[in-house]
Image 1 (cartoon, rainbow, N blue to C red):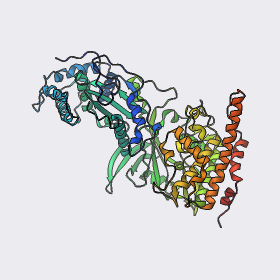
Image 2 (image 1 turned 90 degrees about the vertical axis):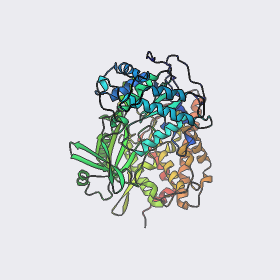
Image 3 (image 1 turned 180 degrees about the vertical axis):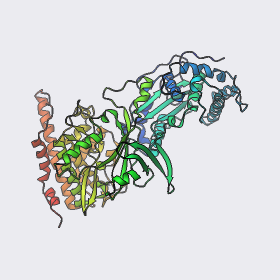
Image 4 (image 1 turned 180 degrees about the horizontal axis):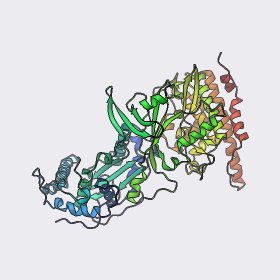
Length: 616
């Protein structure tokens, strides 16, 4: 007869392929999960590459019992009420199923579980084990329908690995990324990994990855039954579906309807065109995971009657401390609007926030349930929806139009910096434009990583930005550790990298074929490698000359990078001097004259003067 005692027969981390499972010792767990690191290290094996920095190097890992308790809590009749005895009660309740004493209403005996698992443990090829495992699981699910506890009385809703193949966690990580990308209404994902006779629970959300210790379903059948028992009773919302987004069909395409009561607009009924050709979809496991989709709605139509190009919804997971009253993107945009009232270089060059909503589903909830301490800097995330005027990407432009819009964004950026708004994430995706009276108006977009000069707490040394466009200092070891203060010059470096990126990868506003475009490896490399690639670019610029680039634009690129190279070399040699004198390099500070002087060095080039002349 089977009985349950302490948590036994489990393994704390995923074994390598064909490695023997551990014995019946008590659970041991570490703060690092080998599995998540493997996802990160081997992600380049697949067709779509996830950046390593988007995937945690080590998943948070906690005992299986803690995870089971959290899942049972969600499946219970009172998920908001703490029920510390829930796991113990359920372990007792499933014992009759484990011991073959239950006969379902369909005439199926739970003794079939034992029979199927005996087939599973026999030696053989991997494919021969799928059927008995599925058979044991299906029999268990049918028999568990007959089991009820007072806390969960709601109706039920519905080595064997080739060592030459990528580690199993790489594949499951990709499955999770694909599921996130395919559906904007998914808050988190639960994956189960089975190797030999051990099953692990993996929980993915935008804050990171959590892995439970393993459950040996041969040696500890009751806990496996409790896992099935909990999942069998999940409502749709506990299967990660955000019920505020309802799938609807519009002209044969799947969209999402979003309804909410708003204090200012009343009933807001948005239709998110999540399968529109112009949508921008994020592919990855963690972080802001920004998605941009066209949106329509009656309430917005009244508010946006004068906007001709339409509006878009930006859906993202923002850090909780960045959605506080002081540092949220809407709060930063309020500050930006105030600056725009007195500065023409900012007016009309900033995104127009039409409406926003913050959801009450922080990623910290599961971590609180599991007893996982939050990082000191606070990385819990919450879902945010922002509605803006539709803008066009700068990559659609070329020649003088590209320069004009790019320079307008620089002017807006430097004015905001001097007024205490630090953008800190300059990339082609954040340089936009729209047309007004036959003139192209540049827009500096996306203030989610921005900070204010009067923010409380140290923010200047946070690593922000997009790797291919980061200043070289941020790609160094010190920069990646957050030891380099973010200054204006770093963002100006980013503007220059953006211009080179667009010039070498696009022709007349269209992305070049893969075999013809350069710099792809900047986007797929880690910070250190990308830094080396950029240094090679600076020192060997002539190798990147392309007949597709107009002579004036090429001259402009060369002259700008000459300025950058001289600036970088001057700081390098000054640093060596401090090092030879045994002095510590002083903290970097910038005055307005430093800012103006650095920008003026580019304006003094002959090509900048030529491109700045009004069109005839």
